[in-house]
Length: 109
Length: 119
Image (cartoon, rainbow over all chains, first blue to last red; front, side):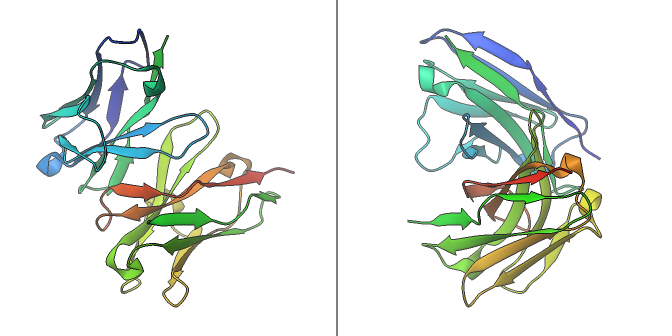
C-alpha cells in the first residue's frame, strides 16, 4: 500500500515569500496521478493541482505542481495572507485507489 | 453553478447508524462519480468510498468494508452514505465530493456534515 508523507509538517513564512511543500510516496505513483488540495479553516478542501502539474479551474498561476515518480512538490509563489491553510496531497489510480498525505500547515504571518 | 449540499449535523450514540444525504445540482449527475471523504478533529482527510450514479458500481475503502453503504437516487440527484456500528472515533465532518474518475480526484466538494458520536 502506498504511503504519502508530506513535509514539512508546519511551515511559517511571510507575505511575498515562496513556499515549497513536498509529498513523498513510498512507491512510484502510477502515471503521476498526484493531486493537491487546499483546506482553509472552516471550509471544505479545494482542488488546486491534478496529474501532478495541471492547475484546476480558476487556480492562480502562483500555484504550481511538479515532480514525478515518488517525489512531488507544490510551490506557492508570492505568498498572500489568504494562502494560510492546510495542504494535502493525494494519489489515485493505484491500490488502494485513494490515499491522502497527512497534510502541511502553512502559516503566513 | 455546480454544487453539492449535504444534510444537517447529526449526533449519534456508539453502535448506532447514520445516513448522510448529498443533493447534487448544476451538472449532469450521472456523468461523474461521487466519493465520500471525512476529516476527524485534528486529523487529515480519509476516503471512505466511491459510487457511480450512472450504474451503481461501488468501491469502498477496505477499512470501511461491511460498515458503509453508498447509494444514489438519480430521480432526485441525491447520493447517500450510511455508516453503521458507529464508534466515538467516527466523529468527523463527512464530505460528499464529485469524483473525476472511478475513483480519481475530487473537483467539487460539499460543505460537509458534522457527525458526532458520543455516549
